[in-house]
Image 1 (cartoon, rainbow, N blue to C red):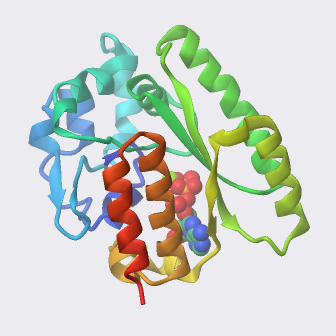
Image 2 (tube, protein in one colour):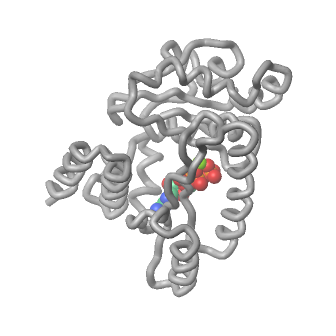
Image 3 (cartoon, protein in one colour):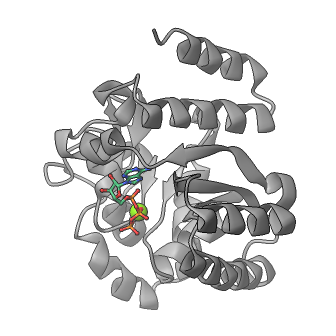
Length: 235
Ligand SMILES: Nc1ncnc2c1ncn2[C@@H]1O[C@H](COP(=O)(O)OP(=O)(O)OP(=O)(O)O)[C@@H](O)[C@H]1O
Ligand SMILES: [Mg+2]
């Protein structure tokens, strides 16, 4: 899990203290520290984390006079790709040089969105950005999936937006929806991923279902079966 957001929420949520790290993604992007040196294993979560903290805010400006500034992350990750099945990159909420690095380094984008009117507007803007990056930097870039989150089927707007999404994006919209769930909101304050905080909660189960769906889409059928087993083991 590569954290590209200076807020460092994905780092903390994985159980890694963003302020006690010797090296972070900032050092990788700006000071040529290797990914292997900067990444840490998050025991609680069971995956490697390339952490971020507030230092990363400065990277944006510092990268401006660096050679191939859009490809810093791509080049750094290339050296460790053979060690991992999946690399997830958490992006900052706005478009900047960090987001450009992420979109250049990746194969696909997962777009989490709330089924609200303004979210559709944001999505249109994001599609434009993806198009630009595709043409200029990453011809292989695709939309991996659209994830409906904070999902509330009782609201009619949710249904309307949902219909529009499936009309436009077809089967790129994940079948799994993430419900609004208090346990998902609580987990980060314990510095835990929701699967260790409360794996029986509706939110955790939804994310397990999503993991299964993503694994199947990517032909990792055996792994998907394991996730299904985990799902079914919940009493
Ligand atoms: N399905 C959900 N139900 C309840 N709370 C949620 C849900 N998803 C996210 N939250 C809470 O909403 C807040 C923001 O979530 P999250 O960090 O995932 O959003 P984000 O879009 O990445 O935010 P940012 O744009 O700041 O990076 C967090 O406090 C999180 O715990
Ligand atoms: Mg975020």
